[in-house]
Length: 404
Image 1 (cartoon, rainbow, N blue to C red):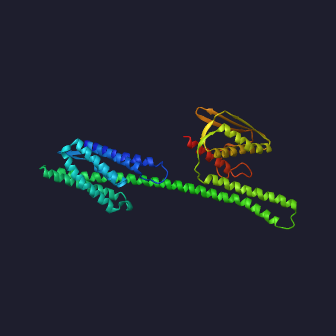
Image 2: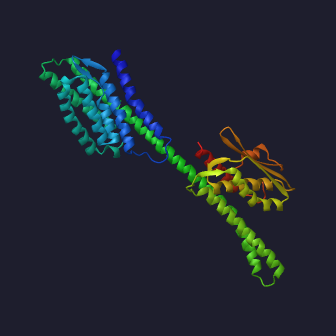
Image 3: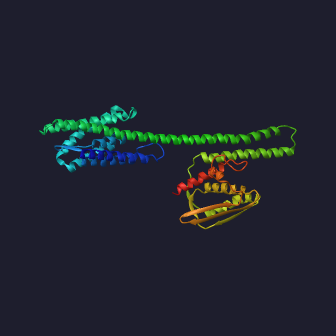
């Protein structure tokens, strides 16, 4: 019973760090890569696992310990490279000398034979490009365990220690345990990597799907003003149109082209990734610039703007993006009051956070409309596209993420 307990404990120690390492990579963007720091970390984990296995062999026969120290060596060689594998091998030799110096020469001889065999097997099998990937590491573990057992048997014969049937039975069990443990570890690594790759592919597909739908919607929205502009241009090409109508039609053409340009600008602001320079921005100072930008538009619609800001409201943000976001929000607030009203912009500190509020006394929105805010081409305005609010949502989300 103790043999099974020690064996299961060894397998747990070998599999748990590998699972934790790969699961941590699930939240990292981009493909899995092994830079020097990752390789060093894998080498360290495998070295600690080898030391544990040597300290807790799952059975012992007349002075010979049978443990799973070979598994961390194989994992380091297979998944982290020659340097990590040699590092783990050196740690095993050093720990062997520390716990039992009498067998050190024997372990050095075994390592000198086993390590070149492992490297030759990896180089000749080309296992990473074969299917199934779990077969070759499992076979390598079985052969390595068999070679270790054979060398141990020769050592016992040379030392005049008996080799009976029970020893051979334990040796067979030793090889099978190595093969099954390596199969389990390799299977876990392969499955986790497949899940990582699948997740990244799904994320890419979702992004492409959203952008393709958005591009189709943009094309549809642009087609309308372009059709109107083309119709007016055809009318203007006729000689019987008087000057007054030409002026009216030309104004309408310009308005429709400006509308199409606005749609394209908002789409590019959302779809095109840009490296933003973050800096400390004083929101109270930024509100003055906002007031200068939005006041003429508010006056034209009979809306009064009141700004109540505390001083020194510092946040880390991109000032241009933040102004764009505030202009979009205040413009929506003004347009929500078709009969005029008051737009109140307040800013204050609450604990360590800066709170910025924009309030209007307009027509309001239903809960369903609020839930749909920020989706492309949803707007409560007759000629709205919803892209301005979507861009504002993205700017706010980026600002929130960068402040964490």
